[in-house]
Length: 224
View 1 (spheres, helix red, strand yellow):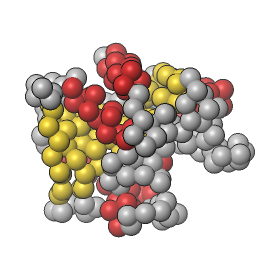
View 2 (cartoon, one colour; view 1 turned 90 degrees about the horizontal axis):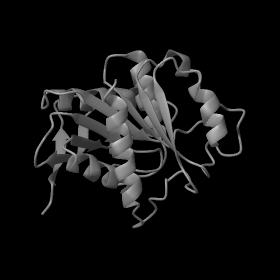
View 3 (cartoon, helix red, strand yellow; view 1 turned 90 degrees about the vertical axis):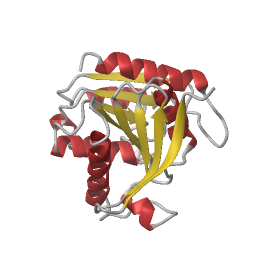
View 4 (tube, rainbow, N blue to C red; view 1 turned 45 degrees about the horizontal axis):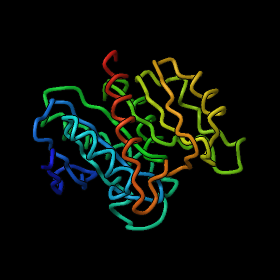
């Protein structure tokens, strides 16, 4: 028997629009999670679907959403001018869940989506209760000098990082150094042998990992 249902979620009354999928648990715990994708993906990425399903099975209402740039262009990466609007889209998605839930709202993202989520939390420190950053893109592959850490010293939202030991966008050691810049409470969950997709490529599923991510995150924010 399914423990959640998945509904299409569209709201054109706000700008940027909200477009994605809402995972509604059978027994809601009144907590909500906005979850978004990386630069080359969309809300249907296997990693996001799996994690949203598992959070919903634990009682969370999950809004798995497409960022505004992806709503405009079905393929390709975001452009240099897209970031601020993408963060505005995440803020609208958070507000949507806040209107539905009485509990705390959390924000998660893979790669580029996670980076924009963390930047939004710097701009608006009280926007969510905690962050889930999947494969944070610390630097472009083979360009470790181009660190994407400028905002981290101002991040005051409790954050759980999930990162593969073979991620070309940053090694575990590099990420550990970057995390030390963050004044908020943090935790790093390394995923042995995983790359940037955390092992969720194509139809590959890592059920134990997604359960571990949900377990670690719920334990982490219990003290947030």
